[in-house]
Image (cartoon, rainbow, N blue to C red):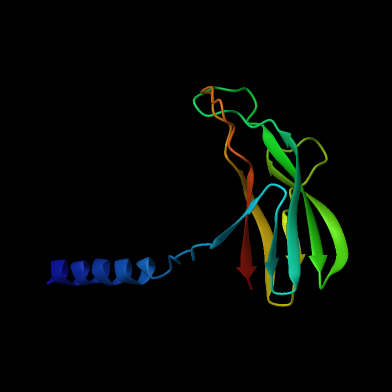
Length: 138
C-alpha cells in the first residue's frame, strides 16, 4: 500500500512540475539584404552599412569571439526617425547591447543577427550580408 501511494505521489508531482515549463514561441525572422529596405506597418527599416565584422570564423579557434556592428536607418510614416547602430557579439568596456530598432505600444522590432557568419574556407564570391530582424509582441 505504501508503495502504491509513493508511486502515485511521484506521478502526480512529475505531472505538476512538468507543467511549469513554458514553451518558447518561435520567432518569425525578416531578412533585409545590405542596401535594401523593408516596410512593416508604418515603419521602414533600411540596412545601410556593415561597420565592423570581426566575428571568429567557423572552424577556427579564436581568443576573442568577435562581433558585428551594423548601421540601420529607421523611418516612421515617411519622416526620418533615426540611424541606429546594432551590435551582435562581444562588447567592449562601457558598451551595452541594445538591438531594439522601433517600439510601439504592443511590440518591438529587434535586430537578431548578421548573416552569413565568417567562414575559414576561402570563398571566391563573398555572400552578401543579410540583417535578420524580428517583431517581439508584448
